[in-house]
Amino acid sequence: MPALADRLPREPSIIDLEAKGRVAGVYGGTLNSFITRRKDTRLMVVYGYARLVGYDAQYQLQPDILRAVETSDNKRFVLRLRAGHRWSDGAAFTSEDLRYWWEDIANNEELNPTGPPDFMRVNGALPVASFPDAQTAIFEWPEANLDFLHTLAKARPPFIYRPAHYLKQFHKRYSDTNSMQQHMARKKVLSWAALHNKYDNMYKNDNHELPTLQPWMLATTNGNSRFLFVRNPYFHRVDTKGRQLPYIDIIEMNVVGPGLVATKANAGETELQGRGLSFKDVSVLKLGEADGGDYQTHLWESGVASQIAIYPNLNYADQSYRRIFRDVRFRRALSLGIDRRILNRALYFGLAAEGGMTVLPDSPFYRLENLKNWATHDPDQANKLLDDMGLLERNSYGVRLLDDGRPLRMIVETAGERPEVEDALQIISDTWNDIGVELVIRRLDRDILRNRVYAGQAMAAAWYGWDNGLPQPDTPPYYVAPRQQEFLSWPKWGQHFQSGGRLGEKPDLPAAIRLMELADDWAQTADTQLRSRIWQEMIDIHADQVFAIGLLNGAPQPVVVSKRLRNVPERAVWAWDPGAHFGVQRMDEFFFEEGTSE
Image (cartoon, rainbow, N blue to C red; front, side, top):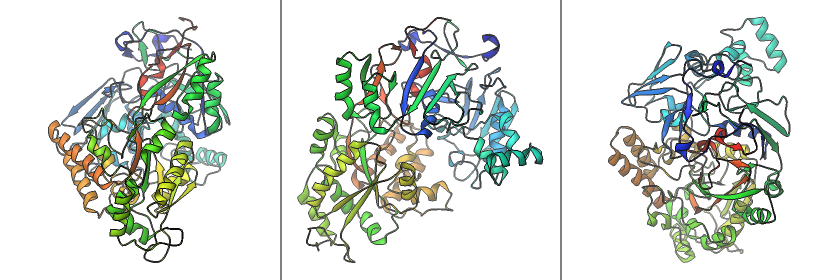
């Protein structure tokens, strides 16, 4: 192992822990944590949160892997890399790694038939990219790209760089035919593109040979239920004493059944756990803590707009259901037919905020009237709205009938990962019966559920609300406009935008069209007041149109922390994006008190 001075960049990222209210740590220890699926090894990319630019704990963007970013009117971005920065295998990290991604991956038709990702396009235009020296990459658009830096900071980053020195051996431009054929035979694939994609899995984090810039690197080969991540000896951050981060030597992730996470946390088998826990687990966790457990249960704020939301699919393939889903009276009636007070008491001991899906109180765009709009339990008004739609006929069970005589049966699909979701749907089924709507719960694997929604095959889905319930004026509002298939109420509209009109369907509801216009208006101005007005109108439209039916928000997220673990905040926000769960809290700064200073 080279000396520390030879492993660090010439200008490492220096972390002032004292300024953050933390203390300098010591080295050592193994941190145990649980995941519920083998594929969740990717969470170490999320939690490690090494990004070209990233959010700090106050959600302000700042350079991280990059030494600096220079912008001109949000059109020209000059990315300055750290001289001497190295990948985890010791190879130099340079602008060649960004060039390789841009020229040989993103713009390679065999690897990316649809071209570069949509955040690299502004009104269809791609940037002019140049790489003048080893530490500089420049991307320049004809118009402002206000989404570029925010996207680089996401929980799931786009990785606009790749370890070129490693991946070139699997790229037809750089590898000889015989070598490529041998690799293809070993991986049992029929094309070089499939081979390259097999090895190019930086987010999946399941290839121990793939170099990384994250604080910990995968050390397990062909793992099944136990995965070890060890310190990256070339990580770019140091504390003010010049000691390289991370402090903790090893992160051990063990795969367990979803229902066992709280039980094992109660038994003291994890030093840090948030994923897989929900508010219903607080009582058993607190009981274990009181019985001498060597951990504390912190209650972090939730950053999602709604703990649970129901998404009627406005792009559902069945035309009869699609027609009623697109009638705002139907969506409002479903929301009015939910008794959120019962849900709050049954699921969260009355500690959550009852209402529809809107931003949280800490956002400048929060309005109490939006939380309550169409969100009080009023079955009489709900029945009137459905009657006004002409859904007057009912069968012998009291279920309303569609025009073609079928019972109005809402099939809500769920990933089955959170018991409180199914508990909530069971309660809602009773109150929806009162308005003549039958609710059927269907449990599916998460990936299957999403693919069904995206294809227009799912009638409705239950999921979290917006990941970011705390938007600010400069937060790109694209996730509240029909620009992303991930918003489960309008997947086809999102596909239409993301594919430049080649896929999906063009939005045709006036409110959805207005949201698209507002998103474009936001992108055309840098005026904070105007951006605030645009954001507010978009939030108001959602509250009025009930595109997604929010149930409750603000329920605390339990986070189990070993009493031996230091620098973990007692209070924080548990949010996927922005936040990356533990990511913005910088896990590389956590340490065990019994470690060593060397």
